[in-house]
Figure 1 (tube, rainbow, N blue to C red):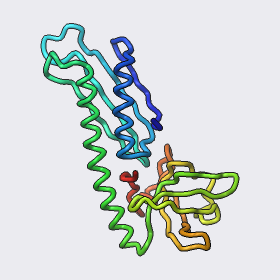
Figure 2: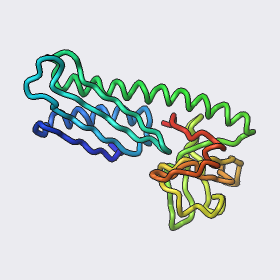
Figure 3: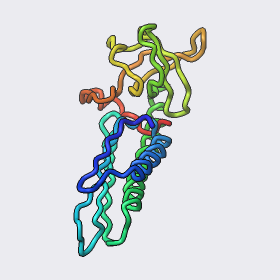
Length: 207
């Protein structure tokens, strides 16, 4: 699991079994979208002796760069629903949202790439800061593309991290495909200005 995860238990004891289930479900989500930036899961017992509805409530909050939040909350009406089932249903709701965003953003990115005449979006996957270069992976076809610090616009190489979304143009260099005019779309945890948001809708559908 790569996503920073915070699990909070409220009004009930910590459960190793539920922790394991949560991590398994999050790993599944990461296979769908591999750069979820953070996750918060609240597992809560809201009533010791409920007369109706489950005593358990589970809320999942996921952050996906640049500024997207997915929320899945489950509090069943059925009194007899076990906590494990509540967790599973909450994750199902989040997974559905993530799939919808992934499909929509992939279609949007495909259209933008063709309209821009080769302008594309990718995620930084490897960074060798001291040597001044790194690699990005395109969302549309999963290609690994080399980039050099001199190709990063606005002298923003120091702002780039693994997981940063960038926009770029690819050219064929002496050693293969390489990126030019690399521009940051999103740096995890940093909200870009409105002008940048108007230029391109940041990607969500990269694997």
